[in-house]
Length: 124
Image (tube, rainbow, N blue to C red):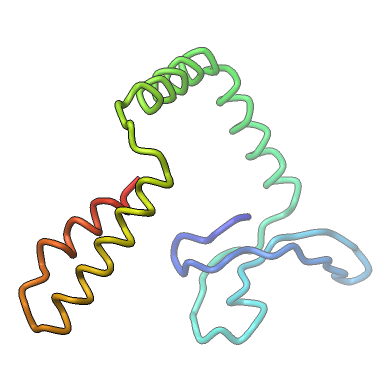
């Protein structure tokens, strides 16, 4: 998927037949449909996109050792975090907090601390 940075719309693959010459190009959706946005994106030949993608993939693969090292470090960091709570424990705690939150809200008591704890529990 290709998104144009200026208008935020996606590019779409279009088959062109221009004066008998057939080609495949990519154009911003806001230029193909009435989206209400003005777009100044140029039409891009599919061969140009293919070349850019191959270059990007080759650049990624040429630095794969550094990439894989960083990826392994990140995975090890996530897995080594001490989190002895299981998913079921977290769900049970969230239910308790939800019940407590409803009671406090209905009695017009201060429920900010419970709301914050609920938010923390839901974070990955």
